[in-house]
Length: 192
Image (tube, rainbow, N blue to C red; front, side):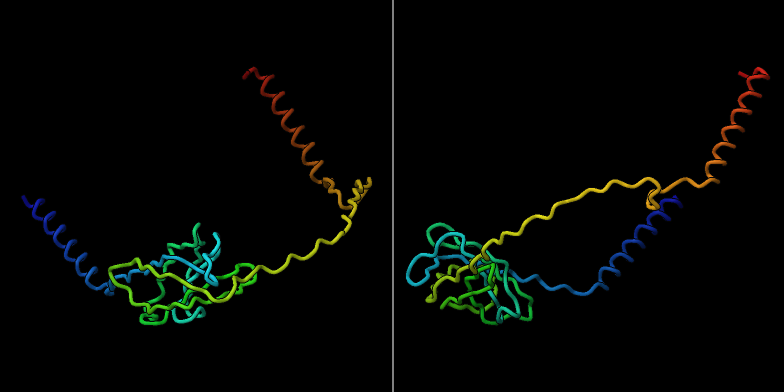
């Protein structure tokens, strides 16, 4: 009976300490929902080609920029997620086509304000009046001859080839002699 009471007190004490520790933890707010944009994309009144990189920025691209998404067939996009830090609530949301190699970008005419709610998906058709940035031209290849590799074998007596020291050689010979003598004595006495 006494053991059960001790075990019960230990369990209740552990639970109380655990609850106190949990209550002392800093309060965590409800995580804010992202806004996931999707819709049609037109550039100079034409549907955008596939595999064009789109990003969303909140409070300017220097403040926060999303990971890029690629446009889909038929001039559509989906999955462009805006989830900046809480400090950027109620900031302007801008949409950009980005050329990844050069970093050139053009901004859409449409904007939004970052105020997340329970409806995380928003449809927003984007229009761009400027042409799509193009990658920089590739540098022409140069004809540089490959260097000929020459292999030089080591020269006998070369100081870079390591040699055993005389002490190591003599120690090895001595170990062989002692071991041989020990085997001779053991066999002579008839142990084996």
